[in-house]
Length: 166
Image (cartoon, rainbow, N blue to C red; front, side, top):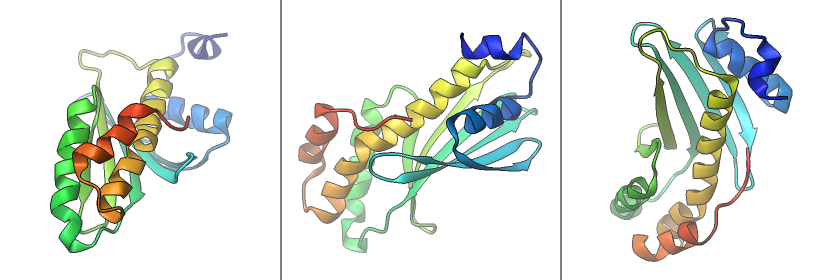
């Protein structure tokens, strides 16, 4: 049975759908408010903190997937170069580094303008893509920050194989 068939064409709030997916996958989650949910999704390399928030104003479901990363200051130029290399490979979403919080961040916004509704399959794919991207590029980020590898060489690890699953 398709995920959307479970909802019998109900008009569900996107965050309600995320909550059902989190329960189904047995992910730890916290419904922060009507329009926001935070959860922890276990990957091969890390446990990823994922927050989804719905903005009715711009009709966008925003996903933020984070994991801690504390590179030495002298490695930041290499990390920023690596981010450019990685983002060139990402079809959906993008990585950034929040220096003050010491977090690597994958962000994506699903725009549903005109009263569109997100399906459970779309939201599941959104979460899965975030975790798979984080899993795929995590080793490359680590090689640049801690392994003294240049970004182009480190990218070969990410390009060679996709890691993990959501």
